[in-house]
Image (tube, rainbow, N blue to C red; front, side, top):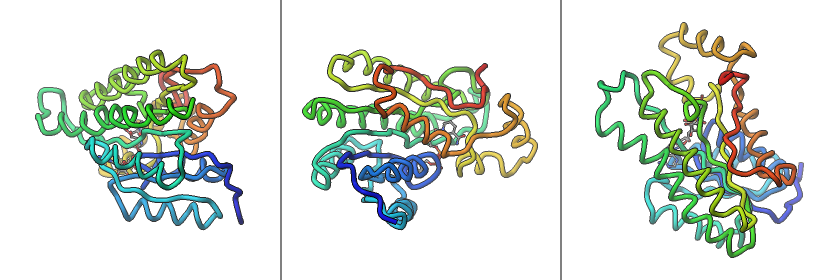
Length: 252
Ligand code: NAD
């Protein structure tokens, strides 16, 4: 199958797995050229192979989103490869906490804030000048339902996702008149490696995860991808600065 290339370009961070991979595949299926970025080269190469196998256009560019110089180099490489950047999905994120707030340590705090907050900030910092020069674009950041409410025993992660929404909303206002829309998705529990790592040791927690969503199940990465594509589309032309729950009703 050949997907014809629309000439539009999407960048996805954290695209070696899970929600990022599903979104990279969804952009490519719509005919966009996709820059697949991650620290995980093997996973990234697999995402590219899946896209190319379906007739799409994609390149892998390695990048640790916590490093300013690497993010600058990533955006420079996007321009070198495709000459433009229409959509960016800043999705790379980590979750490593297991205990209550007082049991956390400084290294954990710095690591989570580094990827989830500084990473999103650095990505937008380097993407926005490109979109400004082009005259428009759309950015979607991955927050979480933990950005909208408490997350017991995940307080640092919870704070990091609240911060993603602060960055998203502030940037949305700053760039609203520049034809750049900036939104966030807030997934509930989604069936990815992150979820499996957290829950495989304790099946009861998996049952609890399903039960916390009124629809009675956890979500699929493809369901988050569909929301990201909507937020990037012309159908969302009047939508900016939103924190869109994709959560089977969990935040209700
Ligand atoms: P995942 O672990 O499957 O994928 C995350 C990807 O981010 C991995 O490929 C990883 O290599 C990459 N990554 C980690 N650190 C990085 C860095 N410094 N630079 C570049 N890439 C890096 O997880 P996922 O479930 O697909 O999560 C994607 C996003 O969705 C994260 O921001 C996460 O916090 C968020 N989220 C996930 C869930 C869930 O239940 N799975 C729920 C809400 C929000």
